[in-house]
Image (cartoon, rainbow, N blue to C red; front, side, top):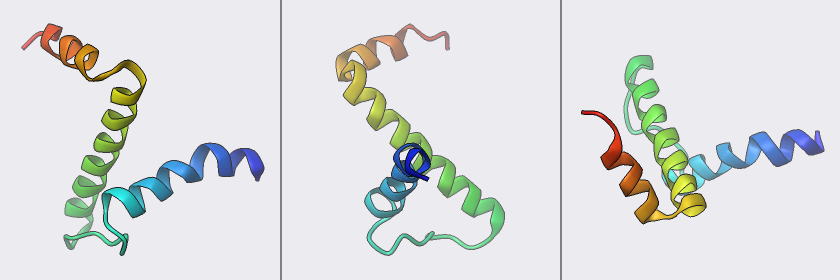
Length: 68
């Protein structure tokens, strides 16, 4: 439980409270739309972590280098 709490529950708590507001509720109705909103929240969480890890300028440079 200690390992799980440290690795799994922190991202869920961060997404629920920081990215989705203090209520932690979805703004849309329906499974398809809810999945889309959760996907955007997870993408935002991952990008924020990446920016903190490698830096904003390095991330911009890597994104520019991707093929169109």
